[in-house]
Amino acid sequence: MAFKIKPPYKIDNTPVYYVKEEDGVLGRAQLCGSITINDKVRDPKQVKEIIKHEGQHVKDIKNGLLWYDDNNVYYRTSKNKPFKKYSKKYSKTSPWEKKAYKNEKK
Image (cartoon, rainbow, N blue to C red; front, side, top):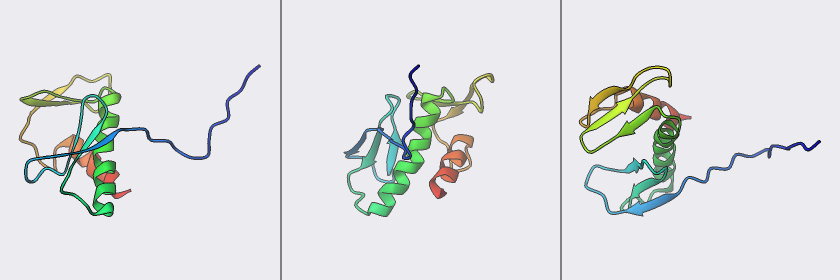
């Protein structure tokens, strides 16, 4: 019988790209599972925070909790609950953002 040994380290293979962004946008979680970071961001500490923050959004997208289109953001707290629709004009107090900011601090 075969068995698997889990490595003592975590591998995160989320692609990260630097792109031109509009002012005020530091990063974005893409529906394809990648993260884009504003190419003007150079501080390694800030890049790490952006990756943690957007990484939480990518995880939520992969787990079926977060989705967006051109006009709205759709979020639910668990898979067995329906999506709630939010305007694209959201703030730090939006439920998916609260979760990402909390993850950023870890």
